Length: 283
Ligand code: YH5
Image 1 (cartoon, rainbow, N blue to C red):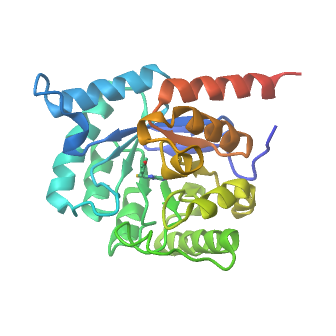
Image 2 (cartoon, protein in one colour; image 1 turned 90 degrees about the horizontal axis):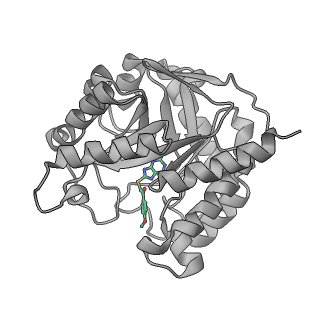
Image 3 (cartoon, rainbow, N blue to C red; image 1 turned 180 degrees about the vertical axis):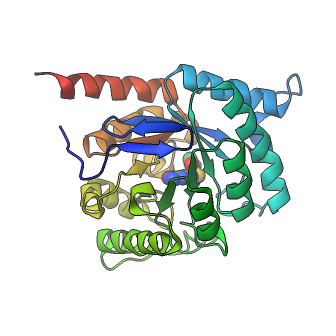
């Protein structure tokens, strides 16, 4: 059984996460391409039904994002991002018993979604946009900060490291310090190695193998590898055939002490978590 160096209670707005357990975070994309079904239901209805299904399958967090971080994706305006994310946050908060994580780098989105019921701010840019640290500090919610070099648009242009784990760890330590200076105490921080962000396949595999080194930072780890190219790279499979590879990585991340698994395939991942928990809880 892995022990933790931090308090296991993480208050997330009106809910509390018990970090002595491993949690499954379901991914809910609020980008227009994600929920087209020929117009029988509105985009909002489809997204809500998807959220409902993920909660029924055992997700204790839902990560709602309105910006695509794919290299080459078009930038979204603040208003566009708000229009995509805010109604979903509001409706999920009203209807489901789940912590709402908002995948955003935008100060206005942080502020507005917190008011609508968000419980966690998940920023792949680690609150480096002007005003983001201040907005996150003001709303008082926990934040997930993630390792990435550069911006999503250029992050895969020949990423290079002398000491991969040392640099990822150093980056996260520096962002933790920036958070604390802005009034976000360490107790409110979740850390993420940032798989697939500014990393080659070899970087991703090596960082995954050595993930435990990040426990030295003293905060819970979130891992997001679901359907990502590191699975495709090893198995030679397209994105719709990466489930089993992703489940292998979810199991491995959990046994390496990750506390939040960010995934598309919630039901399958929850079975993995329950099975590992049963064995680890045995006499
Ligand atoms: C993450 O790791 N990732 S968005 C490419 C894929 C599949 C999935 C081609 N937001 C993370 O999910 N937030 C994203 O296959 C995240 N950690 C945190 N905290 C990218 C994504 C994806 C990209």
